[in-house]
Length: 191
Image 1 (tube, rainbow, N blue to C red):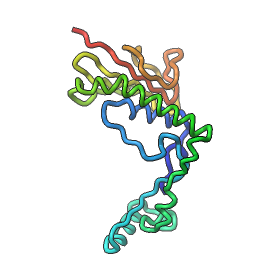
Image 2: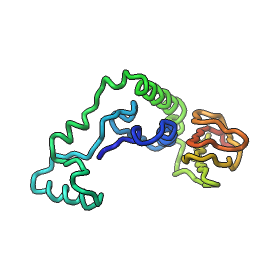
Image 3: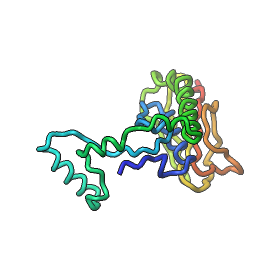
């Protein structure tokens, strides 16, 4: 039904997932309104020719294995209308805080990540230890590193964080990553 992650998950989980995506060297993608945790749904809508409409509608019902009444009809103009953003929502405190957070992390991306991208020549290498994911993108002069725990439970930090910290969600205590923990850092290459 187009429910947005900001309406389904706890704010800490949303920030952790967004921080993992927004600071990665790949080009991030946002759905309109995600940057302020919009409440309006983002359902699938379309204006395909009628010859295709029935096949698409039936395919969505089959793919989601739900009662047709539980899905927005992608060809109903009301579905498109339901997805229109309420731009005034940005001014409400919860939404304004999220928008400020997105602006801050995107400034970090511009300042810290974008200059590294030309030197990164391949996908990151990754390891998972006790649920904690560590990814390193090797660059010509500096490596980009990510440590994250995208679970609602504490997990042991497999090794100390290294490099210059550039963004962090949550704080390590007693050698444990808190739930929804994300740490990004940059380390100068040795040699």
